[in-house]
Image (cartoon, rainbow, N blue to C red):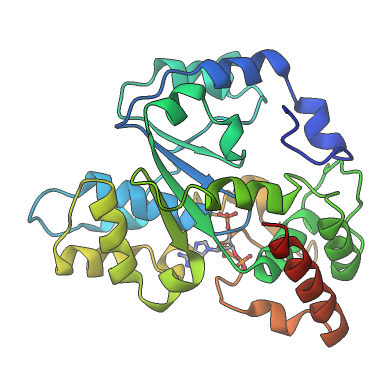
Amino acid sequence: RLVPYGPANVMLLEVFNLPVMERIAKLECTKDDIILCTFPKSGTIWVEAIGSSILRAKEGQPIDESAADARRDWLFIDISFRIHDDKYPIDLAEELPHPRMLRTHMSYELLPASARANKTKLIFVHRNIKDTIVSMFSMYGNMKNLSCAHPVKSLEHFAEGFMQDKVHHAPYFHMFKSYWEHRHEPNVHYVSYEQLHEDAPAEIKRLADFMGKPLTEQQAQQIAHYTSFQNMSKNDKLNMEKYLTVNDPVTGEVLFKYMRKGKVANWKEHFSEEMSKKLDDWIERECRKY
Ligand code: A3P
Protein backbone atom coordinates (compact mmCIF):
# COMPACT_ATOMS: atom_id res chain seq x y z
CA ARG A 1 0.00 0.00 0.00
CA LEU A 2 1.69 3.13 -1.20
CA VAL A 3 -0.02 5.63 1.07
CA PRO A 4 2.68 7.16 3.25
CA TYR A 5 0.72 10.14 4.42
CA GLY A 6 -2.73 10.76 5.84
CA PRO A 7 -5.42 10.88 3.19
CA ALA A 8 -6.33 14.45 4.10
CA ASN A 9 -2.80 15.65 3.73
CA VAL A 10 -3.21 18.16 0.96
CA MET A 11 0.30 19.56 1.01
CA LEU A 12 2.01 16.21 0.73
CA LEU A 13 -0.47 14.92 -1.79
CA GLU A 14 0.35 17.93 -3.93
CA VAL A 15 4.04 17.16 -3.89
CA PHE A 16 3.56 13.42 -3.81
CA ASN A 17 5.20 12.33 -6.96
CA LEU A 18 4.82 8.75 -8.06
CA PRO A 19 7.82 8.59 -10.45
CA VAL A 20 10.04 9.89 -7.62
CA MET A 21 8.55 7.39 -5.18
CA GLU A 22 9.26 4.62 -7.66
CA ARG A 23 12.86 5.75 -7.96
CA ILE A 24 13.17 5.80 -4.16
CA ALA A 25 11.78 2.26 -4.07
CA LYS A 26 14.42 1.20 -6.61
CA LEU A 27 17.37 3.12 -5.11
CA GLU A 28 20.32 0.74 -4.71
CA CYS A 29 21.37 0.68 -1.03
CA THR A 30 24.16 -1.42 0.42
CA LYS A 31 24.72 -2.74 3.93
CA ASP A 32 27.16 0.12 4.56
CA ASP A 33 24.65 2.89 3.80
CA ILE A 34 22.83 4.42 6.74
CA ILE A 35 19.25 5.64 6.77
CA LEU A 36 17.99 7.81 9.61
CA CYS A 37 14.28 7.18 10.04
CA THR A 38 12.18 9.52 12.15
CA PHE A 39 8.73 10.91 12.59
CA PRO A 40 9.09 14.72 12.21
CA LYS A 41 9.99 16.64 15.37
CA SER A 42 11.52 13.67 17.15
CA GLY A 43 15.10 14.94 17.27
CA THR A 44 16.15 14.19 13.67
CA ILE A 45 18.57 17.08 13.42
CA TRP A 46 20.18 16.17 16.76
CA VAL A 47 20.89 12.59 15.71
CA GLU A 48 22.06 13.84 12.30
CA ALA A 49 24.61 16.07 13.99
CA ILE A 50 25.75 13.26 16.27
CA GLY A 51 25.89 10.76 13.41
CA SER A 52 27.91 13.13 11.22
CA SER A 53 30.33 13.78 14.06
CA ILE A 54 30.74 10.04 14.64
CA LEU A 55 31.52 9.44 10.98
CA ARG A 56 34.06 12.26 10.89
CA ALA A 57 35.79 11.21 14.12
CA LYS A 58 39.35 10.02 13.63
CA GLU A 59 40.55 7.08 15.67
CA GLY A 60 41.94 8.22 19.00
CA GLN A 61 41.89 11.91 17.97
CA PRO A 62 40.07 14.57 19.93
CA ILE A 63 36.83 15.80 18.36
CA ASP A 64 37.24 19.38 17.22
CA GLU A 65 34.76 22.22 17.23
CA SER A 66 33.57 21.48 13.71
CA ALA A 67 31.30 18.86 15.28
CA ALA A 68 29.21 21.78 16.55
CA ASP A 69 28.75 22.80 12.96
CA ALA A 70 27.77 19.33 11.77
CA ARG A 71 25.95 20.17 8.60
CA ARG A 72 22.68 18.65 7.56
CA ASP A 73 24.53 16.25 5.38
CA TRP A 74 22.02 13.43 5.56
CA LEU A 75 20.14 13.55 2.31
CA PHE A 76 16.36 13.71 2.75
CA ILE A 77 15.11 11.26 0.15
CA ASP A 78 11.36 11.48 0.48
CA ILE A 79 10.72 15.02 -0.56
CA SER A 80 9.92 15.39 -4.20
CA PHE A 81 10.50 19.16 -4.27
CA ARG A 82 13.25 20.11 -6.63
CA ILE A 83 16.30 21.40 -4.86
CA HIS A 84 19.23 23.08 -6.56
CA ASP A 85 19.73 22.93 -10.32
CA ASP A 86 16.35 21.40 -10.87
CA LYS A 87 17.42 18.25 -9.12
CA TYR A 88 15.34 16.09 -6.87
CA PRO A 89 17.01 14.66 -3.77
CA ILE A 90 16.69 11.27 -5.39
CA ASP A 91 18.94 12.47 -8.27
CA LEU A 92 21.62 13.26 -5.71
CA ALA A 93 21.04 10.03 -3.81
CA GLU A 94 21.66 8.04 -6.97
CA GLU A 95 24.91 9.92 -7.58
CA LEU A 96 26.32 9.88 -4.04
CA PRO A 97 29.20 7.52 -3.37
CA HIS A 98 28.70 4.83 -0.72
CA PRO A 99 28.39 4.77 2.21
CA ARG A 100 25.51 7.21 1.92
CA MET A 101 23.77 8.97 4.77
CA LEU A 102 20.10 9.24 3.96
CA ARG A 103 17.16 10.31 6.06
CA THR A 104 13.46 9.82 5.74
CA HIS A 105 10.11 10.26 7.45
CA MET A 106 8.69 7.33 5.49
CA SER A 107 7.64 4.10 7.07
CA TYR A 108 9.65 0.90 6.80
CA GLU A 109 7.80 -0.66 3.89
CA LEU A 110 8.42 2.44 1.75
CA LEU A 111 12.20 2.31 2.12
CA PRO A 112 14.16 1.31 -0.96
CA ALA A 113 13.60 -2.41 -1.48
CA SER A 114 17.37 -2.99 -1.54
CA ALA A 115 17.74 -1.32 1.89
CA ARG A 116 15.47 -3.98 3.35
CA ALA A 117 17.02 -6.82 1.36
CA ASN A 118 20.66 -5.82 1.96
CA LYS A 119 20.13 -4.94 5.62
CA THR A 120 21.17 -1.30 5.27
CA LYS A 121 21.81 0.26 8.68
CA LEU A 122 18.65 1.92 9.96
CA ILE A 123 18.64 4.38 12.86
CA PHE A 124 15.15 4.92 14.19
CA VAL A 125 14.60 7.88 16.54
CA HIS A 126 11.62 8.05 18.81
CA ARG A 127 10.35 10.76 21.15
CA ASN A 128 7.45 11.10 23.56
CA ILE A 129 4.47 11.68 21.26
CA LYS A 130 3.13 14.57 23.31
CA ASP A 131 6.43 16.46 22.95
CA THR A 132 6.45 15.66 19.24
CA ILE A 133 2.94 17.13 18.92
CA VAL A 134 3.88 20.34 20.76
CA SER A 135 7.06 20.71 18.70
CA MET A 136 5.21 20.06 15.43
CA PHE A 137 2.42 22.45 16.32
CA SER A 138 4.96 25.17 17.16
CA MET A 139 6.74 24.74 13.86
CA TYR A 140 3.71 24.43 11.61
CA GLY A 141 1.96 27.27 13.40
CA ASN A 142 4.90 29.48 12.51
CA MET A 143 5.39 28.40 8.93
CA LYS A 144 4.15 30.70 6.25
CA ASN A 145 2.57 29.26 3.12
CA LEU A 146 1.77 25.98 4.83
CA SER A 147 -1.09 24.38 2.99
CA CYS A 148 -2.63 21.77 5.20
CA ALA A 149 -6.01 20.07 5.31
CA HIS A 150 -6.00 20.54 9.05
CA PRO A 151 -5.34 24.25 9.65
CA VAL A 152 -3.12 24.97 12.61
CA LYS A 153 -5.55 26.82 14.87
CA SER A 154 -4.74 25.88 18.44
CA LEU A 155 -2.61 23.20 20.06
CA GLU A 156 -5.71 21.25 21.12
CA HIS A 157 -7.15 21.41 17.62
CA PHE A 158 -3.82 20.28 16.20
CA ALA A 159 -3.61 17.39 18.70
CA GLU A 160 -7.13 16.29 17.71
CA GLY A 161 -6.04 16.34 14.05
CA PHE A 162 -2.91 14.37 15.00
CA MET A 163 -5.05 11.65 16.56
CA GLN A 164 -7.27 11.59 13.47
CA ASP A 165 -4.26 11.16 11.14
CA LYS A 166 -4.88 14.52 9.52
CA VAL A 167 -1.45 16.07 9.99
CA HIS A 168 1.59 15.74 7.80
CA HIS A 169 3.23 12.33 7.84
CA ALA A 170 0.32 10.74 9.67
CA PRO A 171 -0.68 8.10 10.55
CA TYR A 172 1.84 8.32 13.38
CA PHE A 173 1.40 4.79 14.69
CA HIS A 174 1.70 3.24 11.27
CA MET A 175 5.18 4.70 10.96
CA PHE A 176 6.17 3.87 14.52
CA LYS A 177 4.96 0.30 14.38
CA SER A 178 6.66 -0.34 11.04
CA TYR A 179 10.11 0.20 12.65
CA TRP A 180 9.29 -1.08 16.13
CA GLU A 181 8.61 -4.51 14.67
CA HIS A 182 12.20 -4.64 13.40
CA ARG A 183 13.92 -3.23 16.47
CA HIS A 184 15.68 -6.49 17.39
CA GLU A 185 17.30 -6.93 13.99
CA PRO A 186 21.06 -6.30 14.00
CA ASN A 187 20.89 -3.62 11.30
CA VAL A 188 18.29 -1.60 13.21
CA HIS A 189 19.26 0.79 16.00
CA TYR A 190 16.68 2.47 18.19
CA VAL A 191 17.43 5.89 19.70
CA SER A 192 15.18 7.37 22.35
CA TYR A 193 15.20 11.17 22.49
CA GLU A 194 14.64 10.93 26.25
CA GLN A 195 17.55 8.54 26.84
CA LEU A 196 19.78 10.70 24.69
CA HIS A 197 18.81 13.62 26.89
CA GLU A 198 19.52 11.69 30.06
CA ASP A 199 22.92 10.29 29.15
CA ALA A 200 24.15 11.62 25.82
CA PRO A 201 27.72 10.19 25.98
CA ALA A 202 26.46 6.65 26.65
CA GLU A 203 23.88 6.84 23.85
CA ILE A 204 26.45 8.35 21.48
CA LYS A 205 28.83 5.46 22.23
CA ARG A 206 26.06 2.94 21.58
CA LEU A 207 25.25 4.63 18.28
CA ALA A 208 28.92 4.76 17.29
CA ASP A 209 29.30 1.02 17.98
CA PHE A 210 26.27 0.35 15.81
CA MET A 211 27.72 2.51 13.04
CA GLY A 212 30.96 0.55 13.21
CA LYS A 213 32.97 3.60 14.35
CA PRO A 214 33.66 3.00 18.06
CA LEU A 215 34.60 6.07 20.08
CA THR A 216 36.66 6.58 23.20
CA GLU A 217 34.88 7.81 26.30
CA GLN A 218 36.46 11.20 25.78
CA GLN A 219 35.36 11.45 22.14
CA ALA A 220 31.78 10.58 23.11
CA GLN A 221 31.88 13.28 25.80
CA GLN A 222 33.17 15.81 23.28
CA ILE A 223 30.48 14.99 20.70
CA ALA A 224 27.84 15.25 23.44
CA HIS A 225 29.20 18.66 24.32
CA TYR A 226 29.35 20.04 20.78
CA THR A 227 25.91 18.69 19.87
CA SER A 228 24.23 19.86 23.07
CA PHE A 229 21.08 21.91 22.62
CA GLN A 230 22.93 24.91 23.95
CA ASN A 231 25.58 24.68 21.24
CA MET A 232 23.39 23.58 18.35
CA SER A 233 20.73 26.20 19.00
CA LYS A 234 23.29 28.96 18.40
CA ASN A 235 23.91 27.71 14.86
CA ASP A 236 21.86 29.75 12.37
CA LYS A 237 22.44 27.23 9.62
CA LEU A 238 21.02 24.39 11.69
CA ASN A 239 18.12 26.62 12.67
CA MET A 240 17.49 27.12 8.95
CA GLU A 241 17.17 30.72 9.97
CA LYS A 242 16.30 32.06 6.53
CA TYR A 243 13.22 29.87 6.20
CA LEU A 244 12.05 29.09 9.66
CA THR A 245 13.00 31.73 12.18
CA VAL A 246 10.11 34.06 12.98
CA ASN A 247 10.83 37.49 14.42
CA ASP A 248 8.44 40.03 15.88
CA PRO A 249 8.07 42.61 13.07
CA VAL A 250 8.31 45.48 15.53
CA THR A 251 10.79 44.45 18.20
CA GLY A 252 12.76 41.89 16.18
CA GLU A 253 12.47 39.47 19.09
CA VAL A 254 12.73 35.80 18.03
CA LEU A 255 9.24 34.30 18.32
CA PHE A 256 10.14 30.91 16.90
CA LYS A 257 13.24 29.05 15.83
CA TYR A 258 13.86 25.46 14.80
CA MET A 259 15.85 24.71 17.95
CA ARG A 260 12.91 25.75 20.08
CA LYS A 261 13.26 24.30 23.60
CA GLY A 262 14.97 20.94 23.30
CA LYS A 263 13.37 19.68 26.50
CA VAL A 264 11.89 16.46 27.79
CA ALA A 265 8.22 16.67 28.87
CA ASN A 266 7.80 20.24 27.67
CA TRP A 267 4.22 19.11 26.85
CA LYS A 268 3.38 19.51 30.53
CA GLU A 269 3.56 23.26 30.07
CA HIS A 270 1.11 23.13 27.17
CA PHE A 271 -1.56 20.44 27.51
CA SER A 272 -4.52 20.63 29.87
CA GLU A 273 -5.07 17.60 32.06
CA GLU A 274 -8.10 16.72 29.98
CA MET A 275 -6.20 16.86 26.69
CA SER A 276 -3.33 14.87 28.16
CA LYS A 277 -5.77 12.18 29.28
CA LYS A 278 -7.35 12.10 25.83
CA LEU A 279 -3.92 11.56 24.30
CA ASP A 280 -3.07 8.84 26.83
CA ASP A 281 -6.29 7.00 25.98
CA TRP A 282 -5.54 7.28 22.27
CA ILE A 283 -1.97 6.04 22.75
CA GLU A 284 -3.22 3.11 24.82
CA ARG A 285 -5.86 2.18 22.25
CA GLU A 286 -3.30 2.33 19.44
CA CYS A 287 -0.68 0.36 21.39
CA ARG A 288 -3.17 -2.39 22.14
CA LYS A 289 -3.51 -2.97 18.41
CA TYR A 290 -0.08 -4.59 18.25
P1 A3P B 1 11.40 21.29 20.41
O1 A3P B 1 10.52 21.92 19.38
O2 A3P B 1 10.61 20.55 21.46
O3 A3P B 1 12.40 22.22 20.99
P2 A3P B 1 13.41 17.37 14.33
O4 A3P B 1 14.84 17.64 14.02
O5 A3P B 1 13.02 15.93 14.20
O6 A3P B 1 12.50 18.27 13.55
O7 A3P B 1 13.19 17.68 15.87
C1 A3P B 1 13.26 19.00 16.36
C2 A3P B 1 13.17 18.95 17.85
O8 A3P B 1 14.40 18.42 18.39
C3 A3P B 1 12.99 20.34 18.45
O9 A3P B 1 12.24 20.13 19.65
C4 A3P B 1 14.44 20.72 18.72
O10 A3P B 1 14.60 21.76 19.66
C5 A3P B 1 14.96 19.40 19.28
N1 A3P B 1 16.43 19.34 19.23
C6 A3P B 1 17.24 19.62 18.19
N2 A3P B 1 18.52 19.53 18.55
C7 A3P B 1 18.53 19.21 19.86
C8 A3P B 1 19.57 18.99 20.81
N3 A3P B 1 20.87 19.12 20.51
N4 A3P B 1 19.23 18.65 22.08
C9 A3P B 1 17.92 18.52 22.41
N5 A3P B 1 16.89 18.72 21.56
C10 A3P B 1 17.20 19.06 20.30
